[in-house]
Structures are given as structure tokens and as C-alpha cells.
Length: 315
Image 1 (cartoon, rainbow, N blue to C red):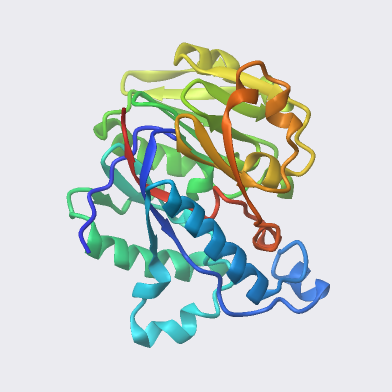
Image 2: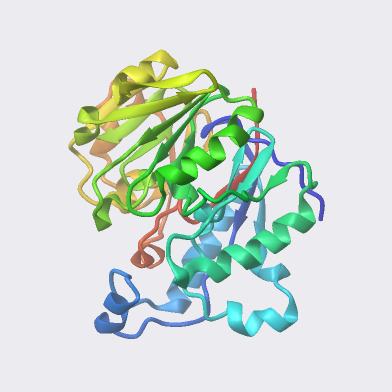
């Protein structure tokens, strides 16, 4: 397989995306779920059905869906089939412009997924497009914390699972990819705010939907010339993006962890709170395709967490 990734936003037409089917294991009881940091017991067969339906919905939009579990080497499959978090592909890497940057897991439990997926990506993607950071500052960077806002700006959360040291290590790669600003925000370090995509999401090209508390947080904006601090809302406005602060997010994953299929359409959980978009004069007209993913969400991630866009086609 040969891939030539390209993503300059969160909203352009999705053409290719990386997923991974759930590991064929149940999480049998609440104690086990708690011990592996999942929300509740997990039924693999139900999850398998929901994941297949999610994949079909993405394919119906015209995108190519690559399930990397199909390509795992035979000798690695018995091991890979026991990695229960493997379905959350978003964290593994990120496409910033035409550069793919491999992520670094914050927890040892997830590190094997990164190693195995990076091996495949390095085979499929030209070497001049695939970057693995080799820097003493490099610690953890999970791409659920990274948003490519537009051709100029990238926003990264340096909270529970990603570090400021890693932002410092990766920013030159992002500048080389064509971005002029890399902004870091440090959100509360709690389970319900683990990644940036559990707090906010882009809806199309002009609206940044976010939990209302985020309006009070500054961002550190890094440029090749230096840096400065801005409030998050002011930073977004500088890039032509309207922050939409909301208190209607009652259940984080179904309400905000969705995937932009194109500038007018998102793929979202059927359990979402519809008030989140309906309260806004423009967003209430946005197209929403709904799929059931509640069993999959028991692992602590939603639709965005389970999809890694590789190619988006700019209009």
C-alpha cells in the first residue's frame, strides 16, 4: 500500500482514514473495567457490530477506510488481539500538512499499539513524509490533544497525556510543514478532560465548539520568531474561527467527540445531546450523521478518538 497523507484542517473532505477494529476480548465486570481505566464492562460482539457500522458510515461518505489490524504481521497478531485500547487510533500519529508525525504514548499499556502501527505507517508512507521525533525533550504526545485548525495554526493540549516538552520538540517539524503558529493550552488534569478532543471540537471551518470553562484559559503561541500569550478566544479569532462556548455538554464523548466528514457534515454518536448544536444560529443547520457507538465509548473514547484522518481534500 502507498499513501500520500495530507491534512491542513479538521474539516476538509475526508478521503482516507485509519481505524482499528476492537480487540476480540470482553471486559467482563466493573472491577476489571476500573482496573484498566475503562468506564464499564464491555461486550466485544456488540462493539464489533457498532464499529463495523461506523466504518460503513464513513465509507458511505466517500472516504477510504483502512483497518490497520488487517495488516499486522502474523507473528504479532496473537499479541495485538489482546490490546484492548487499540481501537483508539487518533492518538497514534497526526497528519500536519503533508507531514505525518508519530505520537508517543503517555502510558506503557498503550505503547505497543504505537510501535506496531508506526511500523505499518513507515511502510506505507514515503520516508520524507513520516517523522519520528528523536529529541531528548521528547516525552509524551498523544494526538487526541492536537488540532490542525487551518494552514497556519495548530492547537495542542499539554495536560494529562501530552507534555510541553514534546511540543517544544515537535514545533520545528510543524513549522517546516508550513504552519506559522503552534499554540499550547494546559487544561485541567482530570479523567473527563484527558485530551483536547474531550473538551472541544471544530464544526466545519469557522466554529470551535468548546466547554465554556475554556474561555478562561490562555494559550502559549510559539512562532519561529519567538512566542506570546493570548486568551484562547482571542487566538481563535485571529485565525478567523469563532469560539462557541457551551454548557450543554452533559456527556463528553457522545456530545463533542465527533468526526468532520466534510465542511458541512459531522459523524456523531446517536446518544449526543442535540442541544449542543441546536442552540447556535448557524450550527443548528449543520448536517449530522448519527451512529451507535455507546459500547465502544466504554473504553473512554468516541468517534474522533477511533479515527485517524490521513487525507483530507481541500476545496
